Picture 1 (cartoon, rainbow, N blue to C red):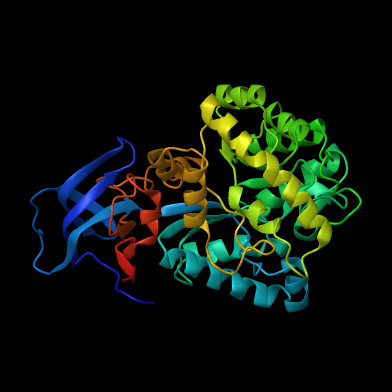
Picture 2 (tube, one colour):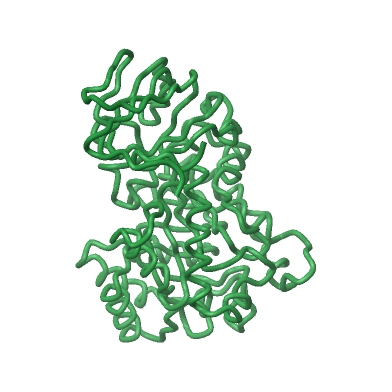
Length: 404
């Protein structure tokens, strides 16, 4: 791996950077940051190291943001015209190697936390465990494992296919036993899918099934996230204990207000449906047709959420059909800004808000003393122009230089 781990005998001093305070929406100019044991131990305009060996990095008046987070990825997929079929041909052994490669691609562009929301055979759970145990080096990975869905429903290729409350309870308990960090359900149909239940207007999991899953998960303080496109499916999630709703393309104003009241987080994933709506040879025609319909309504739903004060976190659906085999979080952030979200709120969505969903906000999401040294150097100010996220100079993860 590139770079070096900063251990207890060595400190890193970053000099002359403009710190982007996402919490206060402010730029703290010409700061120095002292790092030891992978943590930020001091911040100020004039600092020097406390140990004999200090590795100095000249920030060159760059802008520094916290490591970013993508709350919707499928690392075992390849982003081609039919990722499910590709994975089925490759098998789970190649799938987990691909997942690791994709995770590292994210880390190199400053996405230091990831939430995988659907993997065959729970392989993302195993990958997350390998990273945490130090078997391999990688970003902070959280995983839901298999998706809980109805028989033949959305995510069936990556899921526990259930029917009724007993099945719902069994799937939930199995995923908890297997080490899922969060749980993922499919409350509605999706664009990518051709089963009989995959009509765009289809309600899939029943309210009773959803409630069974969320009630059981809450015993273990595990959050439930939901794929939910159509309005009735979104409402079923809102009223039955789901804490994070993904996509939400047909969300109306009343439902957005209800989400805000209940503190439910919204992960819009705007770009994926725009990409899937393109007429690309080889992509299933019904998926393109449904994605075009979703894309017509998605911006309005997003603006409804902003107007209602819904907490929004960033996620992309990376490696989905026709989405490409590269990370897309920065592209998603740019689209969120183009659709009308304030740049500082876009930055919050991919840093502090995402960290709160993952439950690691005590360590990540902001640049503060005591937090992990996850740092992304930018040439220019992203609050002025979110497109400056593309101008990366360097990435540091837990004190280790991984890019630049």
